[in-house]
Image (cartoon, rainbow, N blue to C red; front, side):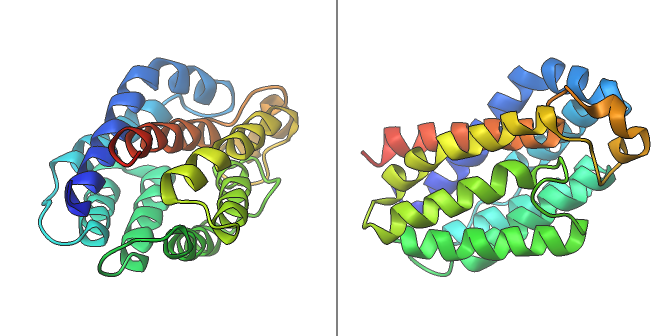
Amino acid sequence: MDQSTLAAQCIDAALAIILEKEPELAQLDSVAGDGDHGAGMARGFRAAAAADRTGTAGQVIAKAGMAFSDAAGGASGALVGMYLMTLGGGLQGDVTTAIQVHSALVKAQDALMKLGKAKLGDKTMLDTLIPFTEAFGAQAGAGATIPAAWGGALDAGRAGMESTKDMVAARGRSAVLKERSLGTQDPGATSVYYVLRAVGEVLQRECP
């Protein structure tokens, strides 16, 4: 399978898991937000899955990110869209090593932190992404393949997601309600974990 087709399959898998989990994401977001996170993510990934799929894997992901940003709306739309666009831009040409992927993940994470003005512990999607990216980098540095590094980093991403239950939101709409968010998992951290897991399943299946 060529890499652009693989990238497209990953986007399709992300859409499928977000549609499946949309009610859960809406419930999480209703605690300290307006309950629209699941719907926004679904709109974004529907548009991402319908975007032009010609070019390299990086170009497919970048165009999906642009479509996501345009369709999803709200802060999450801008943030996830920017993450995907930067990730795609960081994947130049043929991508053959986990080191290459890690470099793109770091660039995307940095762009997200700059745009959202958030950091680890602020109860955002970064609480999933930062531990995942660090763990992926450790796996890549040890010589793991892309699917192995991705799969090996998921536990760290999941732990980061689950840690948001014990945080008080510092950024976004939930920050206005502060303590009301305590005890509830962050919807952004949750949706991003589901997407990472879905992508991992595609990589394990298509790149054994």
